[in-house]
Image: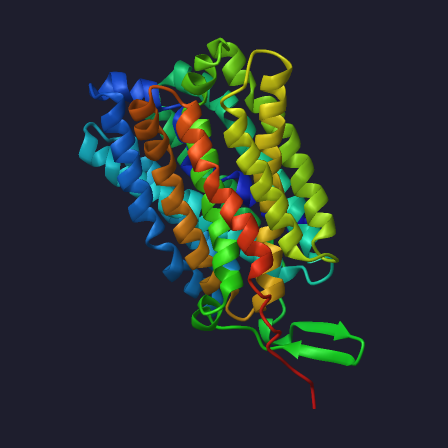
Length: 396
């Protein structure tokens, strides 16, 4: 049980590098640095893209070395970047800081936390990853509430320094107390004809399978569109008649269904075809995009939030377990590292794509409807692409 809770706490501590955690600093940074919102958004986009590029290398390190040690190194580097970011006084320094917090926060620490849980927990792995993911999601969702008060009371610089201290004090002790995982080469599956040892795909072999690109496409689509909708939520829902307070409150139903879906799908993924949950997640994401055009204050706004939370939560509850189920543990860091890299890059492009579409169409409804084609296409592909065959050897 401890590895599951610990993994969730580690995932929650990615909040200084997550969009939700960074969004609290947006308006104060615009005022303090004397820049406009588009300049800040471009800085964020560049930082996210460059941070994403490092994830495959981090994944390979997780395959070669003890994940616990890698997490300690990530925590030290993440903390150092946050501390250095507190001294940024112009856009170049801010962009460099964004590179670091997106690389080590949202990317590396999140990747390492889920990889560690997958390596340590061998029975009911999907449920373990689902519970861990739900804990992490809850922490990330609640962090902006506390951060807003901290920033308003002590300012941007001190808030970043406090985040740096929190990362060290929380992440390092957890990493050092995690149990040692069994060797990935001893991963076994029990079938009707006996026990087999799972050899596992290499990253190159995984990339040659269609299912890798379906899972990565689902992750990237969810990251791109949910970030776009979240980044523009106040303006998007304001266009449909919601007040800024009502628009901000829509994060509550999103969080509720995201947590519930993560737990439920995590409990089911060990016994059911992962493609079912890919289709369900992508269908919910497409529905969210289409609902943008008909949302009104009241029940429809709540339904929109519930459906959007369902889309992200269902995928979060199954993706790590699905990668392990299809490709084994031996090279799971490298395999998921590439997938995380692509999805992180997609999350950077989402807000920009929706903003450009809204400027062209004069509203958010039309580009949202067009973007719904992407998750619909992934859902169709999920059942067209064959599942990878197990790479396993029977023990002698």
